[in-house]
Length: 115
Image (cartoon, rainbow, N blue to C red; front, side, top):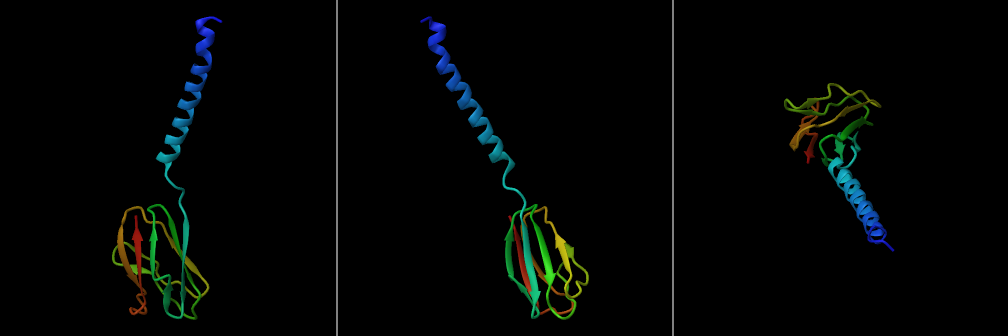
């Protein structure tokens, strides 16, 4: 066998390894796909009361109560009135800890943690 033929399997293995490493690095760089989370409004509570999400995920508040509610966090987000059996969604883009309330019922409190 010629020296060129002897090195061919090694070159093929090196090319395959390089390809696998590049695919793996690309997948890691992309991160995880956005996820949709649900907060149910029922019996004048947000369920779950504390929710941790990633920036880019979507949170959907669904009002299962008999009267309107809001999900309001200072200047960050404000759903406005969410009628019974209606929903509202928000997609945070920045990390942080955000407390929110129902502006109609200030004893209703929740916390959104964005990573």
